[in-house]
Image (cartoon, rainbow, N blue to C red; front, side, top):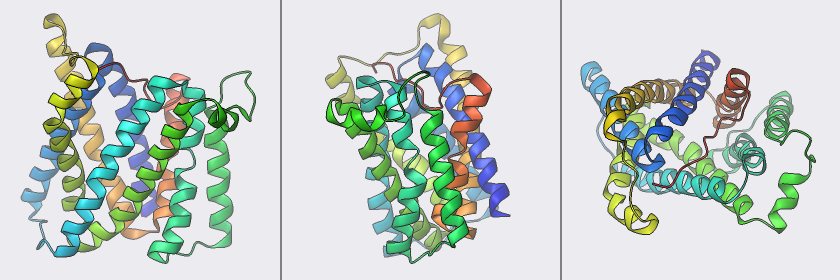
Length: 275
């Protein structure tokens, strides 16, 4: 069952990324990201209230929340910086290491020991994700060599490490309150924190790019659709994490990169625009 849920998350993640590309062509990446995360968080919160899925909020839950929100935002910001400073062909292969990092972290932190065949499978997925992100005609060593010359590579690595921490922390939060309340916490919490930070972001980048008057409705329609896909992604991801090891789930979910590549002939991560 967890594989079905992880594949659902992967498909929804690919759809989210493809739709976000359209959204950021109409408005800034920060504005679009904040908006779709808050709307998705509201959708998830309403589903939790309807299903009466809320549990008592324990001290461990609050500690996990204090860890996951900064790391989630840190991953988003580092990825945006990486893509603004370097080419996708340099950054994308580094992001493919998240399943491997999660498997290693899960073994040490969560005591989730993968089977030998699972290790081989995760390594093969990581290799596939690495090569699918390479520039056509470029060297297979290009992303690794870039560490010596480009800050983008280091920001990409930081994003991968931040999101490894979030993947491991999800297991703790889910154990405390269940998958849907935890998905709501992550999505709505990160969206609200980013919204509070918008004035500082606007000051640092010289303003936020809002949708043009004639594009507002189109942008809102795309953002709402993106929110639905992101909510489905969170549903699949957190329910899969409840049922299986974090490394296994992240390996399957990471195939969203392959799905998006097959759909559009390009890598999953959208190149951010200022604001």
